[in-house]
Image (cartoon, rainbow, N blue to C red):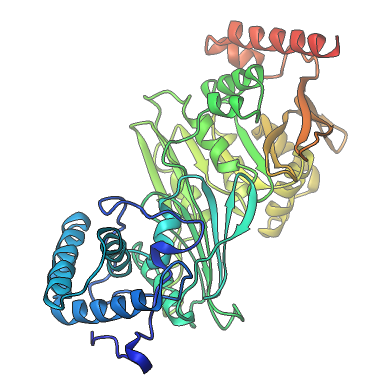
Length: 484
């Protein structure tokens, strides 16, 4: 790759917000490095301006970056692991600084080294955001605008890219790591980062104002039900009920809106699956983080350039049935695969789970019926509803409230049919009481007083009857204490 060409005043046309962008702290040099994607893809050039650095900084950076590209052997660099490649680049950059007699403070030199390493090896200006563990979502709306979500609230950052082409290069680098592509002929792509974070990319001509990149980040320390209790997402008694559901192989659907914590809750539930059970997961982009040793992860595949080779979610779920699964977990049910998942739940694969988008437990059941109908099955409505009742035991509803907090609002059992209507009963619900002086939502979880859920016998079969009874009694006692 040729060196960056200077423009007026000797400044590089490709300056970088890099590690000096507002709101962002610089990660240490040896930290996270996603590694090289393709040896053939060019390294990411330095990017747009940042008020915390002077023009001299960017002039120096452009000169050092250009000299680095001339001096480095990209083919040899691609053979090194991420840490070794980072050290090699740092050594070369230090030599360039010494040879050109560039005067910089130690802190400026460290920032320059980190910035250039991120541009060559990583995801450029996104690196500082990816290094922060408090960020839940990163939303890039074209080259000039980047938003993040922190503690449920969206805020704008000072991160910018040189132009849309550089943003597209970063998007291509991300998706190429899992063998996918994004360009004008295939402008939509779902992918994941090495840590499992979910990535969605949509590029022109579909994205009018330039590539749109959305990253749903996962915390490095996986959330547990105990942490959800501390955050107020669920009560201790409700958490005990969820543990029993996970342990006793109850067929469960986790429902909620976008960003309501469905995947996080599903990860929490899977922690209580026995280690000797064979689990198979099916996802569009693998993001579930199972702890069990006997787990097989499957991922869909988009069509190739010729429009062939596509593997859909339904293909994966149907293939699961031939893989001797004990539990099937579908990352997100959104189409005809709902029929195959219900079939699996109803034919000996107890404890299967899935997530879907819906605003209430009853709406979740209606959506499953709609998905099956859209799949082209000419079945009577009553037959589909009977299949749903015979397959799904519990629906857990999550929600993100307007103050950014996340709550489990319903734990609902599917009881049966009355005529042509599916009947349900709530075990736990979340009541909104108002808001405090700081605008935070005030509410409380309460038990509905159901003393013997429909899955009681299943809990007895797995030796969890006493635990279930104690949780229900404690929840009822908490209700009386709250009323008093």
